Image (cartoon, rainbow, N blue to C red; front, side, top):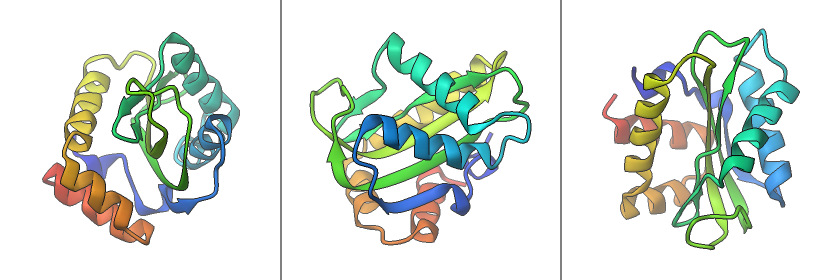
Length: 152
């Protein structure tokens, strides 16, 4: 599975004003719902919040990868927001988060889900990539950067 299969420029927001974890997850849910005809933004938000309750998805260095599984979902979908101002996200390093890459997958999708999360964690582990992500000024530029970094 390639990143371009589940992330499109229309689900990327640059310089978002989301000022809380809840508002960021709501925005991500709205973006993800646009590609999930059988799931609402509320369904997606509940899935993301349920996962957050199990343990925060802030992986450090200002990055979070909220993710969840959906019953009425037949394919993985991703969305990304770059925040103007970093927010508290209960990250592992206790630092605020300004880069959020959200992912929803079908409920029965275990192996693909883990592969996607590992790929994303590897991408965001690269300091140069994180800095480039923060410097992008448009969804198109961010999309191009993600696709180049993922090698597809």
